[in-house]
Length: 313
Image 1: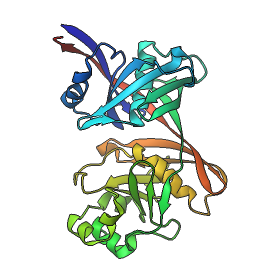
Image 2 (image 1 turned 90 degrees about the vertical axis):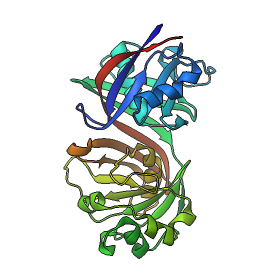
Image 3 (image 1 turned 60 degrees about the vertical axis):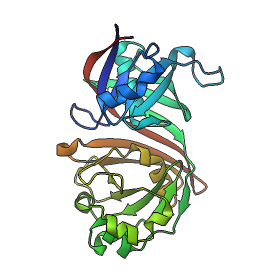
């Protein structure tokens, strides 16, 4: 029998039972490859991350002591890139002493299937610590989208709730495409319901985007500049999934608007409510020559549980 430690951390939240819960195995080297997906399915959270010492060539940023290889699995399979697991992994590495934190932020390098990502592990505040990761972004943007009337129908909203006065609708794509739609208020974002029949009759399926990112600048919380939510044909009607994966495309979308000036644009965006595990993301976007160049995504992570997985190997 073999025992393996695991932890869960709630990320993009400064308290337990908010944000997104992620499972982390901080020392996964001895877990057989064939069991990674079954373990993720057994734990059945949105993502489970397995941490290994990094064996990448010396060209990877960082030293051997602060580089870690992450393999991320959802219950459906392995994921090449995910943001939430990096926050969870950093918090757990701090807890286990594998990433000792002093008075200054600790730079780490996490290597996922998509490549190496720079991460900063910030100071602890009680049970929470702040983690930020950096990405280069260059999304492809398309202004050909369904009409406001079509969007309103497929979102089950009145057309007046599609608010294009300050921001337009766009299709944004890096690895996966997102249809990004500005909405009048947070209340309307939360009331939206995906209408499959209206979707199939609109021009949306031709865009290949299977997820719609709704956002509003009229929020219910003072600490959030925007409120966001994902909808789509593969998202359950009562689901409110994490939005971190949409942030690179959302950053490129914002930068495509002329009133977002050159330089560094800082904002916060939340998802959900206290009743539905609210998340708060801190975003820094660098815009140069009309294009996004760097994106930094940060948030708090809180350790919630720890346990042992026993396997008969």
